Length: 359
Ligand code: F6P
Image (cartoon, rainbow, N blue to C red):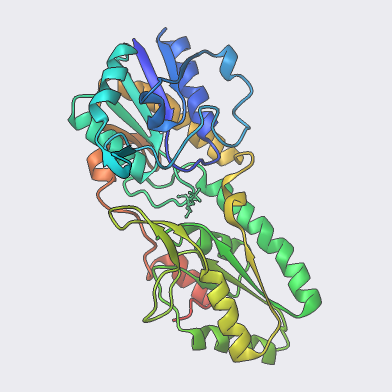
C-alpha cells in the first residue's frame, strides 16, 4: 500500500504528531509506504510537490509546532483561482488533482484538516478517491468529535497570556481587553476565560449588551477591584450588531476577523471613563509546541487514520467520542459546526462564579 498524507487549512499544534504517528504506524505496523504532499491540496496541482516520509525523516517532530508538510487555507482544487483572458476567475481542477493522485499510485489519501479541508476531502471521496480525514483546528468547532488537537494548546497559550495581563492590569488599575481566535465559535474564549479568571467573557454564541459589560466593570470598581480582564472572541458581536468580519470566501463564510476587541475597548472607555488597553493575541495561539494532551491526541488520531485505511473505511473521519477514538462519515462531520451552548454547564458555572457574558 502507498498512502498519501497532506495538511490543509490553518496550522495547529499537533499536526506533526499526527504525521509522525501515521508514518510510524503505516511503516512499522503494516510495512506501507507514506508519501507526504506539501502545502495542502496545492501539492496535488500543477507541479506535484511530494516526498516519501519515513520514521528517520519524521524523527523529533512530535514537540514541534506547525506542520513539516506546509499548509494553505486557500488551495481548493474545486475552485482554483486562475486568470483567463486577463481576468481573475475560478476553475474546477479536481480532475487534475485526481489524475496526480493516480500518477502517485496512492491507494489512499489522508487529509488532516478543519471543516474546509474536510469538505474538500469529502468531495474528492464522492469522486472516487479513497480518502480518510483527521479533524484539526484550534477553534474546536468541528462537530462529531469531542475535541480537536491544537485546541488545548491554544487555550493554554491564551491562559498564560491572561495570567500575565492580570499583573500589569492590577498595577495600573486598568481594564485589559483580550481578543482570542475561534471564528464563529467561542470555545477558546470560554475555556481560556475561565482558566485565566476573566471577569467578562464575550462569545459569538451570546450577543452582548455593552451596558451590561460596563455595569460589571463598574460593580467591580465599586468593590475596590480597579482592574478587570475582558476576554473577547474574535467573532463576538453586540446585541443588534454585526461580527467584525473583514474577509469572506465566495460562499459568504467569514475567513478573517478584526476589530471585535477594539470595539469593546472603545465602549468600555466611553461608558466607564477607565483606562483601557486592548491586546490581540492573534497567531501566537496557533504557534509553538503542542501541550502533552495534544501530543497524545495527535498520536491517537494518526494511528486511527492508518487503521481506517487498513479497514477501508474511506469517506470517514477519525473522531474522539470519549473514551473511544472512533470514526464518523466526513459528510456528517462537516454538515454543521460545533458551537458553545449558551445554557451549557460550563457557561452556567462561569456565571455562578460571577463572570459576565454581557447578557
Ligand atoms: O481556524 C483557525 C484560525 O486561526 C481562526 O481562529 C482564525 O480566525 C483564522 O484561522 C485565521 O486565519 P489566517 O491564518 O488565514 O489569518
